[in-house]
Image (cartoon, rainbow, N blue to C red; front, top):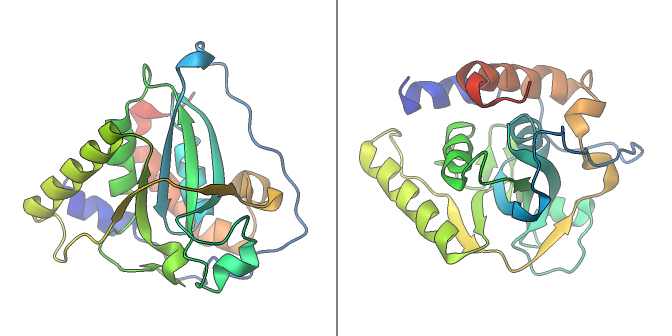
Length: 217
């Protein structure tokens, strides 16, 4: 399946946005599923691709992923709150930190899923979620991650998969702050919430069909 067709299918539905999230929901970070054996071998990837509820719901389904934690990165305010980030003035992007075992799933594979599950050509926007906090971004943890991300971005641009140039930011991770507890595992804990039911669920279903061989059982 060509990337362009997949991106069109994966685009966010026009039902509301990721704003006005409730502030009274508590949750705990998910534990691993037992697939990963060597905890010392784990590595970290940090991606921003719009609302972190969507990104978290996708990546936590992958074999080799130990945990996915929603948070904020790339800004200039220490320990920002969600409300501060939503003003668009702190410089942060909504991101997910993906803790994974590279012997099971590689950074290359994570990049493939990152590129194919959001629109990297819309500046500071994903669907109805608008603002710099929703920008497409890769925050690399090593020189190797930087080179792989830049290479992948360049090759996709040259391929003509999109009519517009890719605007994904590729920056070194200099800060990261976990989001409030109620944001963690949001889709799992709130599947009937409007945004989850009408935006995340259809997107997740398409993702599972395309990447079924990479999913946890």
